[in-house]
Image (cartoon, rainbow, N blue to C red; front, side, top):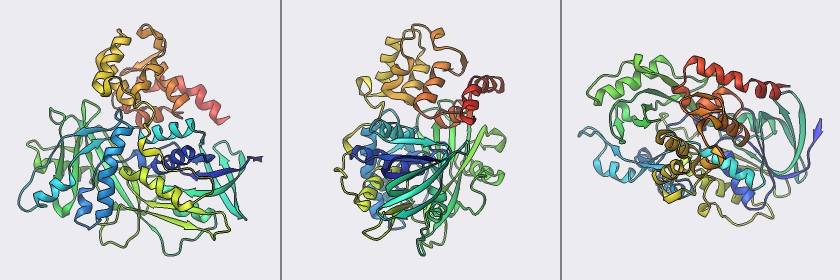
Length: 462
């Protein structure tokens, strides 16, 4: 068994909260190790509508602190990652039986579409000194005075021990299991697991606008432009008590979303139009609300340990919009000696330095630097990698220099970048979590990508 040197902070969980805390902590001078059993953003963080918003529905439940923080954080995140977060115009069909117009205006000052945020935070955390071990799970942890002694297990079965001054439990739906493995009981605190399902269909309408549809029971369904030629529709909300390793959008949920669109759009949407469906489980703090929709989306930070003991902080609940403030609050609660001042609000994420200040001007500049690059591919690369698109393309002087082409603009050069810089290992990592090119590649193209990745996958297993 390998024995590692001590770190200030051991973070378990590689979703948006774990990555955000790792980035903030590393930037304050703490040594950080983040472990993730699967892929970064492989669960809840990647299976959402990916909207940065103010929380329209939370107004009617009286969550004014959460709404205020969300509204402020939208603007911070827009400055931090202008290549990943884009303002979107929303159309809100309305009749007198629905929410009042003043509430809609208050909650919808600006909505933004989001992608790759977890990876961007993880990459910046690494640049600041964080170590990230993907495919590694926490087996157990015990307190030894002012330190945690944790046992980790990698995907190949090898084990390692690490000592840490503090343990952060950012396991999302698995948070209670992680606490149990550390011998911590959080009293009556618990999670309510709520499943949200989404569907993707060929583009339903022209224009860049999105729609927010109000439906029976007070549920809201978003209809969003997605990957240029598609429309994303979601989400459902239903209690979940099944196997977290087997979460899927059911036929019933898909049909509900189709009916929600058909209620407002001129043409009905048959389930046969669906080209992709996915679902995720949101780990919400159990506040004993009557319905899944009414459960708080605010986060709760539970600190365990006496002043003389190594602390553990469990992160329960939360939403993507407020992840940065959650990270700041987490470090305040831990209160470790040697922790520097808050800094993240004014620091952009990797790729944010766009030529001309916008994705449009940056894409035009990329085409100028690489004349053989078509505008559609340039736009895609800028929206995925921002100012780092040029670093990914490197010294290529023609399209052939990018290596094997797998289709839809995906080349060996980009695949190698994703493996080297973004922890991608499998075809699914690349096609569905780092990009959404799985919507465009056929079976033969996916097979060629899998063959190209096979030596890497085999090396990871051996």
